Image (cartoon, rainbow over the protein chains, first blue to last red):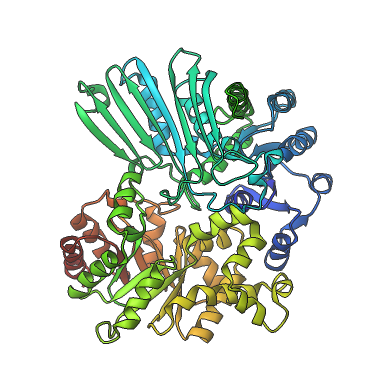
Length: 343
Length: 285
């Protein structure tokens, strides 16, 4: 079989990791990478044979790519994804999808119109524990749902200086876009789509231009309400920790990337779950991968994207449409925070 | 290398199984003394090698070892660099150049004869050497016979197929530190092949090896094949599969793979340390 030709645009922390994973995929040749930072391109120039570009348009014009991974600051997703789709190139785009839902809608429609595989890198959807949570909620083990809490904490911002695009709101920086988007996406895909945000608080802690913490009450399309709590400058966390807690009439589930803790009022024989606590670990739930870098989920999402291209079958996990909906929830939260007079 | 190497994950709130356990560990090991006490308990049962990341708190442990030279006679540290989160967070917050500036001490960069940062931008081998020196500074005067590259960096370089970087690292560690280079990876078979391809023979490779196949990329079978057929010095880590396996079952499995030279494990209580060490001695003699 002919190998697929891939390219990566943006060689920051995520892009470089995507490039490494794409580069080891047995069905893919990573033929080109593009970045504007000379130090990164110089490293590639010295140590690899991949063709290098400063300008993504030149890359699309010179290379006959089957797919591209776009991992640039959020503001640049729209022009780059649009260019790729018009060149009939399948796209895996970093999250969050776009700066606003007008841009996102246009891209989503264009991808569908051109029949291209489109996926956004909400990697939590490829973590075994969250998958298991989704399955358990769908099967109704904890009965009718009554409340949820979606949380993420980490220590990305540790001082007031911060110098990258992540601290610039015009580039799509800030905790709501960068961190909270993960949690919103999980809530949306596992529990239900939020349709309303209330009581939003966006707090600056160390950053000057962007929010460092976001708290909001979300109401879902099924009427269920819950709370979003996200803070990216909490030094008690060694690395990003994302969790969902879901309370039902028959029990409760607490889930993060490493374990899923299920409490049931009565046993569920069909699921093999006892009354009281059952804990399942990622060691039993991780998706097997051929190459590991920082977590199975990063490879699993790329494997899935490649598989969809090979089979010419649009993804049901992390499509543009789903990521666009996450952008819409971000807009609801921003709008509400302005109403609360703190945004 | 000793058969048993003592790891440091438990000290720095690294648990691959539970975020809650991480938090408990962070509380328990808040003080450096609590780390030193556990290291001393491990020494009491005969574990004299500490394999640790270049986490900033390790420098305090090194101070303690230097201040008590007689007590720690014959004690070895295997540094593992870089401490990945430190760098990953810094890249997110300060960008690439900002990170280089932050972690290479100004005096090192300034005294760098050939022209400081502007030069480093074009000479990545010198940059790598400066970063290694910066990370190694805390171990001055301590016996460090093996110096490891951490898995995130190893696997990134491996994935990007920049294999000659390993060759340069290998050369520098031998020349500058008179030590053996070691490599931690989550992709052992691919890493072995990559090192062979640049003429690095019989390398020390530390990777997950456990009965469950947890974090053994490509599957347990290919790992077992490499462990049986290829010439390298394997260290097994994550042998308990993040705690999913009982120690006896876990070590019994390793006993069937006689080429494994050492086992890396970490524990917080004297009983656990002793139990695991005895199992290793029993099944892997």
